[in-house]
Image (cartoon, rainbow, N blue to C red; front, top):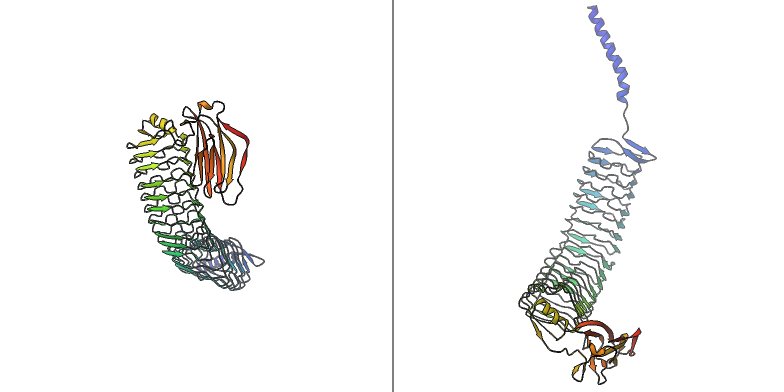
Length: 580
């Protein structure tokens, strides 16, 4: 019995000894907060609910970044600063209090906090910095105090659940992309205190259908309302310019009005607005940019501004329902693919003053039946009218010098084509593919005559060109003296081009024509010279070409500007040129 008691006593002593040794070790606990001079610079804890200790005045950069276990954070009242990326990628953070003493929240502080649903910004905050709440995809409620003056770049970008935002009075600036991708945001009232509005602020807000803009902005920046839900939009009359793609991919937009206060608009402005039917553009606009109405498949007609001086590449590309367009007089070039793919386009009015029809300009306009090319055009580029399968007749004016490769390819119903002898360059690889009904009309000894023969295309001769210089009833074979490159004159003023026999003149043929008879006429004088007479204000080119055996030897041109009130004079060439 004594031995049992002794054993039990020894066992208890051993237990007490172990307890005495272990207790101090288990009582020692590592602090997860590393704090230096009031700044929390590291957190190593694993808790779901984090209480930041009193005395912390600042949370350093990236302290809680990517700590997925955190669900709730309690901040001390003395806190004044939250550093950049402090809670970024805390994807399970759903609750946090921001004490009233906070005066600064750093860039990206709460970016990608994907379950955070609401936030109240303290009254001391003056700026919501770059990416502060970007990609908080479940953020629904945001309260902004009147102290906020600036909302930074991408501050609320892709907050997909945000349904409304009350922008405070006193707000001055909305940064680039600040609300981009807020797909449930449907109405915005912008206070008049806003004077700076960045790029793509509401881009891809595809529920946004109403907005009141500040009266103290003058420009709608590029991408501002791309892919929004507006059905109609009236640009306010205090706006003077609109950036590129500002209304692109607005799939519900049916009508828009641009006031006369607007003088500048960027490229791709209405690109891919499939329901756009009505566009009113004031005459103050001088530029319609590249791909301006591209793929606006419901647009039937549009009145272009009278002062327009540039109509961009692919401006009406693939406008499937566009039927007619009248191009204003200030346009000098039909740009590349301007009307390409507009399959229902029947009529286009091209004004005097256009000098070039660029590549693919009317490519695949399969319903185009009428087209008048003005006498100012000098060059028609490759594929410009390819697959205009409804064209039956086409006349090339005598101002044109060159025709590009396959410019009429697959115009399968084209029957009659007139090509003047001013055309001295035709792409030799031009196949005129698919033109089985075609007959070409032209003059004797012209480039198009020899081309037609080489390609075995039926040719109808119109005799000798009226543009050739005649002497005693025959083609005059002499030379031309040109001593100026440009000449200005008033209406009814004259300028003479000297023609005389010289050198090998008896072997040559000389042609002199005006590109625009309505601006300046050319008439042969008894002396054999040619007289240019101004008709009305505008610009014409007097084109002089010398041939031998149907081959062009050389050519020159004189730009003649007719204008009221100017002194008749020319800009001399370095040397007087004789073409003979």
